[in-house]
Image 1 (tube, rainbow, N blue to C red):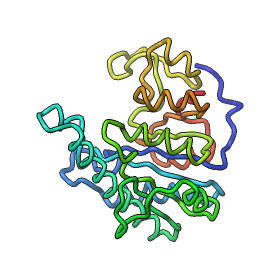
Image 2 (cartoon, rainbow, N blue to C red; image 1 turned 90 degrees about the vertical axis):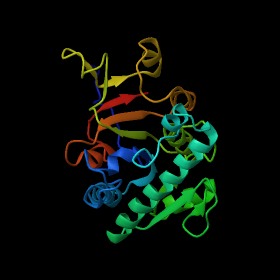
Image 3 (cartoon, rainbow, N blue to C red; image 1 turned 30 degrees about the horizontal axis):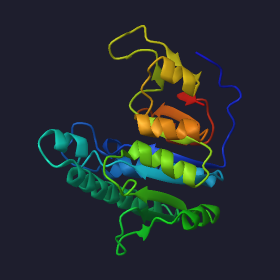
Image 4 (cartoon, helix red, strand yellow; image 1 turned 45 degrees about the horizontal axis):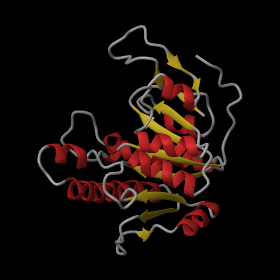
Length: 242
C-alpha cells in the first residue's frame, strides 16, 4: 500500500534495536556475539556510506520492567533495573563496533563514569559530526518510559531525520499477519491514519513524540540478512510513517 518512491536518503538517523535482537532465538544466552557482530557490521557499512548514526538498544534480553512489576515488583525499581540492562547491551554493541574500527561512544542517562559518558545533547551531536556512532543507554533515566520513547526523544534532541525501528515483522500491517494471512502491509502511512486505524507502531508516548516533532519512523524487519544496512542507506524496505 502506498508509494515510497520519494523516500530520500538521510544524513543523520537513529536506529532502535530491541534487546531481544541481540539474542539467538531459543538460546539461554542473553547475548549472541555472532549476532552482535552481524549488527555491528551492517552499522559499519551504513556508517562508511557517510551516514551519522545513533543507536538505542532495549534491555529485554536481560530484564523487562513491566513484566517484573506485573509479578509483584515495585514498578520504578523494576524499570531502573531494565535501564541497567540496556547499558550492558550498549557496551556489547560498542565493543563489537570498535573491534571493526568504528569509533563509538556510549552515553548513559544514569551516571556511571567508569563505563559511559553522561548524556549531553551537544556532546552527542558533536560526536556524530566527527563520525562517531553514539549509543544511548539507560533509557531516559526515568522509570515508566520505554526504550521506544527513548528513541523518539533522543532522535528529536539530536535533530535526526528518521527513527529506524528494527522488528521481527517487515513493516506495519492493517491486521496481525500472524493471525490473518490476508493482512495487507503498508509501504507508507501517515501518523493520522495510524491513529485512526489504531495501528500499533510504537507505544503511545513514543508515537506522540514523533508525530509532534515531525519525526518519520521506518519500521522494518531485521530477520532477513543485511536489512539494517539496506534500511539505513535508503532502500525501500518496511513501512515509512510520516
